[in-house]
Amino acid sequence: MRILVVEDEKKVAAFIKRGLEQESWAVDLASDGEDGEHSAVVNSYDAIILDIMLPKKSGLEVLKAIKEAGVKSPVLLLTARDTVDDRVKGLNLGADDYLTKPFAFEELLARVRVLLRRGTASPLSLKFADLSLDPATRKARRGGIEVELTVKEYALLEYLLRNPDRVLTRTLIAEHVWDQSFESETNVVDVYINHLRSKLDKDFPVKLIHTIRGVGYVLKKE
Image (cartoon, rainbow, N blue to C red; front, top):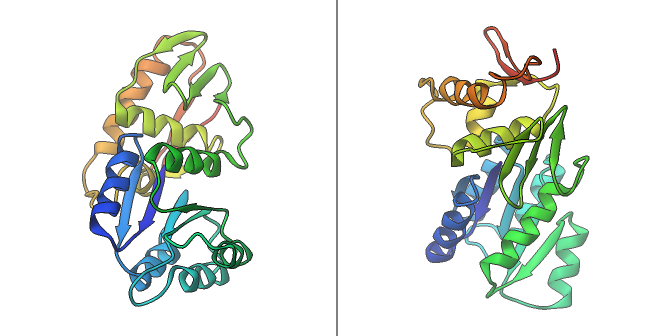
């Protein structure tokens, strides 16, 4: 999953980024409204965490602009002002949820997970054929057999399971599993795909992870 955090307080932004990365998600940061709006419009994010009080352009202005630009990513607003007016304005502009500062990271994480689960077939686990992944426990199973995954293997498998039967380019995978600083010329995506194949496909007659030559990969039944 790839998350955009638009927050001008450096300590708060670093705190959120560190916590989300520990959940195996790629995180991009923007420190003002203009940069946040630009990132949200030109990149694809699974969720956006947007502070209301920002320099250059307020969070509400950013929210209005990105929704008018057609951005579909769910938005969680952060506000230091616990007023009904702020909450109503944000929700009316298209925000999906809000959180008042100060907050516990566990609450932020729970709210982001809810946003990410919306629109998926199963809110508790991700399944495809005989492959399943439980985001709560981070445990994967193929044919009922538990499979141990590293942090990045988990993140890659989660992205594949959220996009079954969809051809995913190497660039898309890199953007959602790694972050903005990812070096596109490396073969790290192919390396991690091979790791997953070794753990999830090697000992099973039906292969689920397929290569689309010259493009990328797709999770599908043969």
